[in-house]
Length: 154
Image (cartoon, rainbow, N blue to C red; front, side):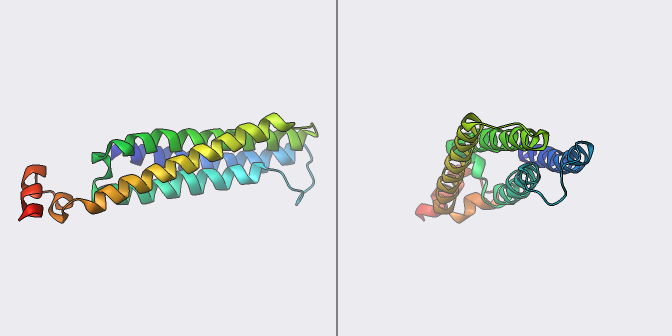
């Protein structure tokens, strides 16, 4: 549970910092205000997919003890790899746009891989949540697993 807390906190810092970078980098390079760059998308991806989603998962972990499922560890690492990869490509592509340089297809391909990882992570999260919902209710209320299993068979 602490890992989720620290990850959400880290994404909050990265999200705010990326917004600051977006504002200052575009000003520094006289980028026309209102013209599209993917730097703004990095800010919202980090705050929404990183900070807010992981806070929601933290609450789900507290209520359902999702980490009892082996799928939860897979979710955590695959999902975070996807968020980091996607956000990094948004920052790279957005920076190139501000500097007036072409981005190329490689960045889009890598960003697409990041989105695939985020999607795979979400599927794993829902599988872990589904398993947690099928466990006997007493298991999610802090009762030892053996006792909870006996109650479920009761």
